[in-house]
Amino acid sequence: MFDLFAQLFRFGIVGVTAAAIHFCVVVMLVQMLAYAPLVANIIAFFISFQASYYGHRRFTFAESAVLHSAALPKLLMVQLINLAANESLFYFFLSLHLPYQLALLIVLTILPMLTFIVSKLWIFR
Image (cartoon, rainbow, N blue to C red):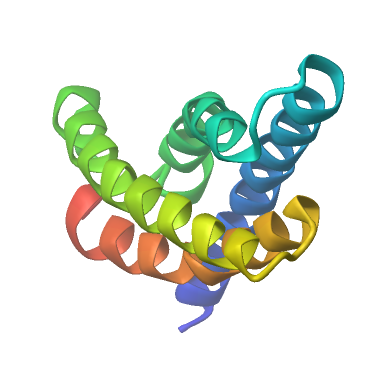
């Protein structure tokens, strides 16, 4: 049981780091380059994916023997589904006229547990 909690803790560290990168990239693209929030969100998603994959690969699921060539395509598929959910929820919260920063924070807190479960049971199993 301790191993699961330790893994959840490591997942949280990597997830918060990736979410912070995601959030900062969106804000930078919107504030500095005048990107639309939904476009900035897609770009930020792919940038933060790099930190997420390598962080989970090397830290959260470091004990996994799954090869990079097997894990990366699975995680990419899960993350593309996650991107669709992320963008849909972001659009929904923006349509409620929430500030884009608040809408993004809400979205970035809703989806991570699903990613952990799928990662543990399928990608890095």
